[in-house]
Image 1: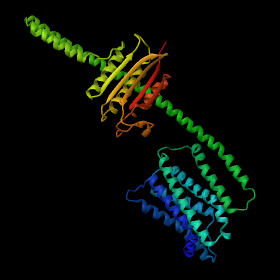
Image 2 (image 1 turned 180 degrees about the horizontal axis):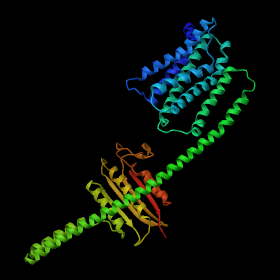
Image 3 (image 1 turned 30 degrees about the horizontal axis):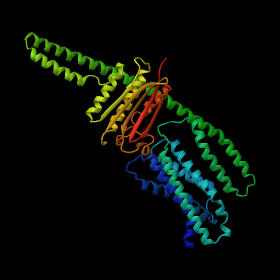
Length: 439
């Protein structure tokens, strides 16, 4: 057991294994330039080169100059690890050099910080039973690799965009943090009894403070730019929806006028030919068909009448039981583009969500109260989708597909200083919109 541990320490197998993991991470994040290069081939090649440089080269030098072989210092580990990984990734993997260098430096910084965290164990080597120390040392190496695996998952979840070319002003702050941590770890390893290590630590922390503030500032700026882009997208979508509805309304009116003209001509022909009974029967049939095709929603607002009738017609064709409770004043003023965007998306979502639901139902309520136009659309659900998908992420595989257009709805409502709420109550998903009335 101790013999195996001796060679484990002599050839720094923990460092070799860590480099192997680093090779896997780089391959996974950057992908190979040559598709025939497999991940295990790259990892073994990199680890072999690393072993020759980190273990083989010092061993050769010690033999040539008749020196006692000792484990290379930390600065040498940092140099060989970073240079080997960077060189091989630049040669064999895709992506820009900055992304690869950032991955490598953060990886090495984590390893060094972990070594510092384990320093009490290393300092107790002389006072601890050998077999116990060997066990704890190997265990700490296993824990280190578990942390490296988590770092791998973190990198994969937040990859660096290799298509973005960063300026020196942006690149240096990103790299300074891991480099400063590495400097600290090297100083601690080289001078473990250095009395003023707290001074070095304070300098590193102080110099990193503006870096952290700069990163926070850039993050807030990026969020603000994203918010403006979303608002512009919502505005564009509102204009598109308004244009689409207007175009469909005009087309429907032209179609109805054409149909009325044809029916009037046919009725006139029957009357001229004296076919009064046939004309009477035809009038009864036409009136019956007209009653079915006439708008079933009368809100007093032609725009809402058309929009709601069109959506409810789609719902009825899908076999959805619909009810509408609408009580609006004769005249009310609200932003029509926002109203078009919000109601179109909410109703489309509700109708689509009823696909495959037993006893599908759609309920619509509209009123004006306390200076707001209030609309509530509720559709039946078989389970609380907010518990399973609280963010309502859009996906074609999601049957209760309420996620589609949610961001546009929220942005459109927020732009008008309105209120948008969603909830699941008594087996119904409810979307409530409140838009301020114009004075």
